[in-house]
Image 1: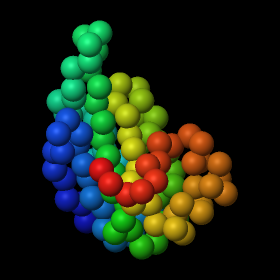
Image 2 (image 1 turned 180 degrees about the vertical axis):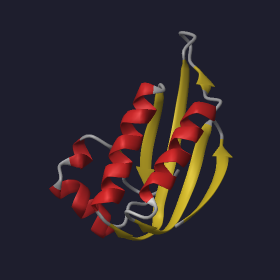
Image 3 (image 1 turned 90 degrees about the vertical axis):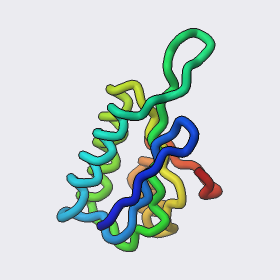
Amino acid sequence: MTTNEYLDEHRQVIDVSGDLDVATARALRDRIAHRSDNTPGEQRADGSVDRDVVVDLGGVGFTDSAGLNGLIVAHYDCEAAGTRLTLVNVPARLRRLLELACLDSVLHIQVGGSH
């Protein structure tokens, strides 16, 4: 698995390529956690900060249960840090796995693919 990171407006974007499996899930989770803590965010009218981390999964080929678990844990880690984790460009196979596990109702998945 490889990642490419960049800041898009006030959102940290992490592009992921390769397999998301037992060998790589922890590394992605750690990368997301690091970004959720270091994303500048956008100031809301009420003074709070809106922080977003976007994970672009368009380059992911294979995902196993460890990969799914890594996404779930990253989601909850981001929530605890006050950050919203959004998944974009989710491949059809991974999207189906998320639906079968009822995770599509837990995770923030943007349909349409743009950041």
